[in-house]
Length: 351
Image (cartoon, rainbow, N blue to C red):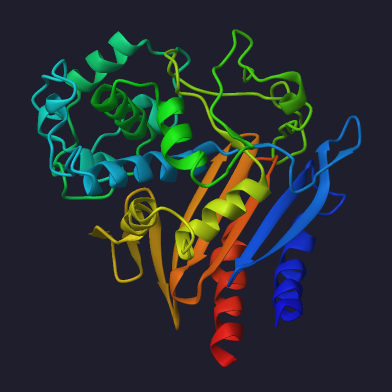
């Protein structure tokens, strides 16, 4: 069956990562304690450095499930509550709207927040922490928007969630993710580096030699190797970098997790639980989205920048997970949601 699964994945991915496409693709499949890797194309077209399972990619919004896991761990350990209002942690949030938003609403994108950094036309400036707090305090929603009433995807909401977690625990976000998630899962090739003055991740030379060059969907190089993007100029607001091998371990923990700490296992399950029903097909958990398709329910998270694309898709009922990491914008990750994962689930169900 593993050979059949491998054929399903490779058959779908190979056409999306041909010589006509800039950069490359690293993918990983977890299926019932078995991991398969798939590598295509180049980490850096200019030097011909090939993609491997250990190549480091910019995760873009694939970072969000890690913050959501910190929230879930905090809930399970009694350190915070999903219905805690934000001023409990950040008393400087005093605006009429923002002071009524809860931790859980940030984590499930139901806060109603929509700031300039969340949608085009994109701002040209960066925001200091003080300016960000002022933006939040001044926020007035569109008519009919209220905390908890709707799902509006917001990157700024997760930047705010970072500040909540840092204030709750008195530690920077990279240290919290490292200690509570990466170290227990032995994810030694996942980094949340500081952003240097040239907008490059600050990483040691050995790690930087494994990092991709990012490309637009048209094949143009965007930014230097290790490019980090953010509209916020305070620490911890750049992107994570990780390998397909490390994210395979994360996906395995999400759908299986038998060998890990029970608190962490339960936290990963809690993040996947649907908290808000969007419509008959889609729902929202803590960072994760739920997609009900005929015969299969998928829990997944896409992410992307203009020079990076990522996707983690899970079928918890079948203990399947898939990871896609591409060093170009607009990679068609929907192929995993609508084709690969349903086919794998049907294959397992038929055996």
